[in-house]
Structure formats: structure tokens, C-alpha cells
Amino acid sequence: MDFSIRAANVEDCKDIARMIMELAEYEKVTDHVKVTQRDLEQDGFSKNPFFHGIVAEVPEQQKTTEGHMKIGYALYFYSYSSWSGRAVYMEDLYVMPSSEVEFRVSKS
Figure 1 (cartoon, rainbow, N blue to C red):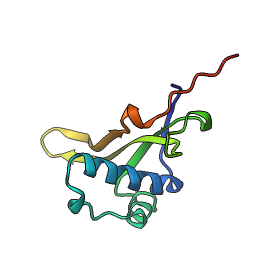
Figure 2 (figure 1 turned 135 degrees about the horizontal axis):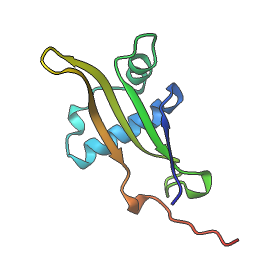
Figure 3 (figure 1 turned 90 degrees about the vertical axis):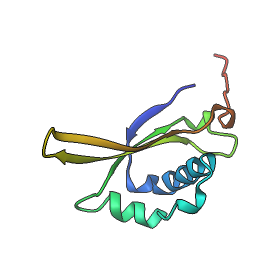
């Protein structure tokens, strides 16, 4: 399967919100999720973002059985420790289960 990883942008928030819920469903904690697509848009893509993100996506011809091209994400933010200095904290790292991704082979 071909995929690419790139910096997330505001247009990715709908898919990131979807995958946050998928992760919460897997962990059986959907009632804990309070963040909305709008929160992600405001908090991650304002002048002073609270977090940064990356997304993994597949080409159109390899989209999931549900039609998704974005198949993974990671959210992270910068931190600073008075003892150890600069740090990056990764909040989530999620990739959709392979059973949900169609593996298609094209013949040349």
C-alpha cells in the first residue's frame, strides 16, 4: 500500500475528529471525548496553536472500504521542563486497522 505522511492542515480536522472517535471506540472510552472538529480547527490552526499534527493518507485508488483517504494521525505539542529543557509530547498516534483499508493491486 502506498501512503504519504504530511503536516496536518485545517481541512484535515474532520478526518482527525473521526479518527479520534475511532480510537476512543477501540479503547471503549467514547464518553471521554469532548473535542469537536471546531475545537481542532481553532486550537490547532490559529496564530498560536495549542498542538500540531501530521496525517497519513493513501491515494484515491487505495481509499478505505468506507471511502476515507486519511488513514492515520498524530497530535503533538511542545513542552519545556525546568530540569531537562525542550521536549515534544505526542498525545495520540493512530493508524486505522488494516482490515478497514482496501489493498488494491493494479496491473501495468
